Length: 246
Image 1 (spheres, rainbow, N blue to C red):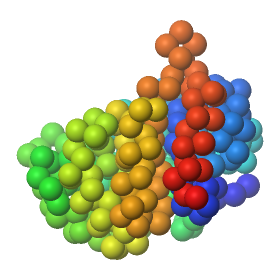
Image 2 (image 1 turned 90 degrees about the horizontal axis):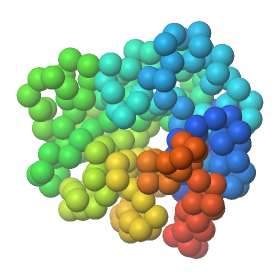
Image 3 (image 1 turned 90 degrees about the vertical axis):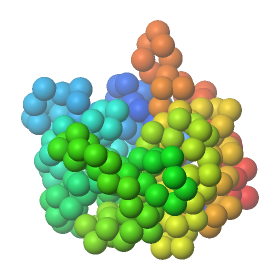
Image 4 (image 1 turned 180 degrees about the vertical axis):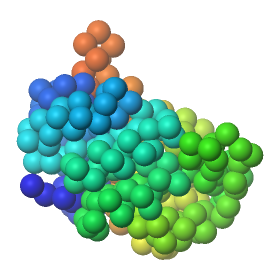
């Protein structure tokens, strides 16, 4: 099984939530494999239950598993690291302070490990206090360049920029994209992304020269009745991605 996400044109990989193994497989096929499927650790009471279930997702999607926190919940950080050590997925979601532990337990470099940073309202600065304890303390606002280098020091692969609230932080996001391109770091825009703003959000990263982009599209494409991610919407997002990297 592959340890690396399958990027479209070596550039973009979609990240959506999977409500079931069947839903994950359908989304994987709809995206021609250019996708990782988020399964949230917060939905499981024990590590054992999570591992047993997540292995089924791995088998159904050639390991296109993204081990998630659950709405960026910092209290899930250690569980994510423990699960990832056993599962060796393609993608791991982490708060800023959890990156080093996840990378050490993965014992290989191929898996993407993101580090969650948040907008500050100031262009060029991000809040890195996103861990279980630090998120309860005053914000730690640092230059985006410093945040990237700190993540690299810890073995991180990408910036998870959350919560973006769509394009509410557009200027800040542009600065983040510029820094990711400059420092050869992947970017994962997250929060409030939908079919209407997806293209513009990814285009900003493409135009900045970001080499690897993993946009997260979650609640906006989930069927409220079934809880499934809509397969047709995944197909639409793939078409947009193909247009963006022509």
